[in-house]
Structures are given as C-alpha cells and as structure tokens.
Image (cartoon, one colour):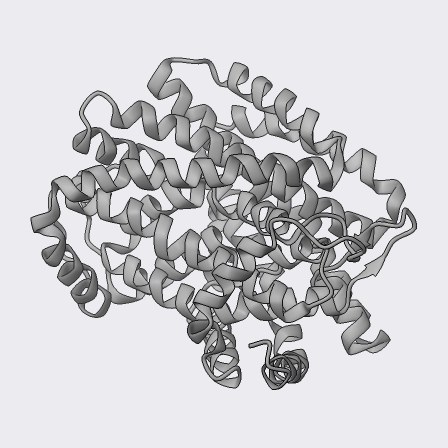
Length: 448
C-alpha cells in the first residue's frame, strides 16, 4: 500500500502534472494582478487589523480576522515542523529555496481563491454561509462544470482525513512518545476529546479558539527559533548561499545525508510548501467564505497573508534552525530532525519545546481541516452529513495516533492533496478574469 501511494503521489507531483500547473497558475495570476499581492502587503496587514471585528450587519459567520486564523489553524501544523524537515531530508537545503518561490507566487493563488470564495458563496439549508472551490465552480462556471466542483468536494472529503487528521495525530503521538514517553493511545485520546469539544460547536467555536491559539503559538515559535538563529548569526550568509546553490546544483552526500538532485529539491520543496501553506489546494477559501464581509478583494488580501506568514516566516524559521545547527546532515527525518535541531540549538529545552509546539500546531490543524472536510461532505451529501462526519472525524484521530508506518500517511496525504488541487487550479484559471475585474474595480474606486 505504501509503495502504491508513493508511486501515485510521484505521478501527480511529477514534472508533467501538478508542479508545472501550480507554478503556471501562481505566475499567471501574479502577472494578471500586476503584482497586486506583492505591492499591497502593507495594506493587507492593515486590513487584517481592522478585520478583528466585523461591522454590524455584514453577511457571514465569523469576523475576517477569525476567518484567517481558522485558515491558518489548518495550515500551521506539522508542515511547518515535520514537513520542512522532510523536504530538506529528501531534497536537500535547495528545497527551502523552492518553498520560498512557490510561496511568493502562491500569495496570488491564495488571494484569488478567497476573492472567488466570497464572491460566489451561498447560504445552506441551515442558513450558514458556505463557499469554496466547489461553490465558485458551480456558481461561477455554471451547471456544465458542476461535475468539477463535485470532484473537488469528493477529494476534499477524503483528503481532509489525510492532511488534516491522520498526519497530525500520528506525528504528535510519535513525538510525545519519543520526548515524554507518553503512550500513543493516550495522546490520541486526549487530542480526540479536546478536538471533539471544539468541533461539535461548529465554525464559530472553531473561529474563537483559532483566533486565540494561532497568534500565540506562531509568535512563541518564532521567538524560540530566533534565539537559536541569533546565536548562530555569523553562519547565516553561508546558509543562504547553501540554499541557493543547492537549489540549482543539487546537494552532495555528507554525514548521514544521502544527497539530492535538483529535481528532488524542486519536487519536495514545492510539495512540502503546498502541504504547509495550502496555496492552490482549495482548502483555505472554504474558511474565508465564512467571513463577515461584503468585499471579496479585502478578504482576499487578508487571505494571502496566510501564505506569507506560514511559509516565508514560520517555515523559514524551522529551515534556518535545521541548517544552522548542522542537524540536516544527521540522517534523521521529519519531526525527529526538527527536534534534534532545536535541541542542538537549545540543549535540554529544544526537544520538549518542539514537541509542545507540534502538539498545539497539530491540534489547531485538526480543528481547521475538520471544517473543510465537513463543508465538502455537505456539498456532496447535504446538511444531514454534518454530524456523522464530525463523529467520524473524531474517531479517526485515534486511528492516526496508532499508525506506526509514517511514510504511508505522508504519501497518502501527498496523493490526495494533488487530487484536490487539480480541479481547483483549473477553476482558478477559468475564473481569473473575474478576479482581475474585481481587483481593477477595487483600485478604480480608490480603495486600493
């Protein structure tokens, strides 16, 4: 099964399918928007600050700030710790460069997703505002394309259990066992109970919890990483050179590192970058569609900050710690590699800190992705599927915690991520004129 998932994942993420499609979409949208997402970064930060509280009477479920925090709760997870380490282990230091590239252009992708999500959202039978790729495909492209939206929703319903559930609980259970000798079933049980309390309360409770946990954990993680980076400040130029050179020349074997080609750096850098920031995956716009706002463009600007913060800040912090401490050539992989790096930089403290950060990151990811999968299941089966999906989601957390072969989980997640992304990217390209028109109107009105 592991070999099958690995083979199929390799096809999807190969040089002829998803990587060129992701790159083309991000570059095309960035150029079509005339680098709007780069030039308006400051304005996006101001919009985020003002979006902490929505104006009375705005349509939606949660304030714009909570929508971003819900989206980021799903993106800030094992990808920022274990995913970065896996990318470096498999692709060498050059993978970090390609993570940066996909994130820089991915900001336009994430922006466009959120713009369309707000533009084409609708109310379900329960009166809740719902949206995402399946809805902007159905409402934006018309009934002839409904099959594409259904395809995305089916993939999303299943994929959520991989990227947002099995990977998260599995990684946390392993790390907590290795660091604190806590049995995996106990970790899985605790996560399942805590997640159940929040998830059963719906998007508003998820938004409230995410808006408190996400900023705290992100700032705390950056501060700890900065302590190690500053302590090794003199080596930063050499690490930057290593990242850039390895991106174009590959990496020779050294220590326990087996070496990596240029293509390995590109493939694993892009794959793990998308796993982390989810730009192009179609997941984040599901959360942004619930925002209380009347302006798709303003919500799009808030959304693009998720990619910036996730990859260009948090993933970069992890990568620098791994490379500056020399842990990258140890032969270790995943969360174990990150833990070794932080423990090398902060002896006695780094390992436990990574374990705790990973546990919180993964917990919020489980919350965010439960909402994504639920909305996809609702699109396929109707509102009566919501409660059964939530119950099934909570039960699968225990399954993930008890899986022993992590490669199966990662390959399964990579495969399903790719299958989700393809329908979404097709829709983004077809609906790009709508995004460009809304953005021009926003600028023309003097708002941007």
